[in-house]
Amino acid sequence: MLNILYWKVIGLFVLGHTFTWFQLNAQFMSDWWKDKPVLAVVAFGIPAGLLFMTGWNIAAQESGEVWMPRFLGFCASWVPFPLLTWALLGETPFTWRTITCFLLACCIMVIQLWR
Image 1: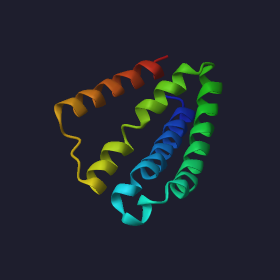
Image 2: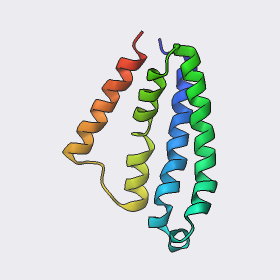
Image 3: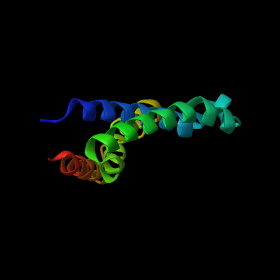
């Protein structure tokens, strides 16, 4: 059974990737953000960094290694990125390449959490 702490870590990583998505893509959603890269880094990057650091610390302490949070963080990015890119930028995640990468990311996550 998956440790409840790992669910918390996955949630922190998903939220961190959500902030990162807005940091990088707000410029494509609104002209207001186009000439404000420093503001985007401060407004979205600092909370993202804190979320990643918290999740990383919890996962590394629980697993006793840093590889597991590395792969878990990578795989967690596959939750918000396709949804936000599709909903807010109109780019479809339903291509054979994207679906294959998503399935591979799911396999990586299962392997990392398998105990």
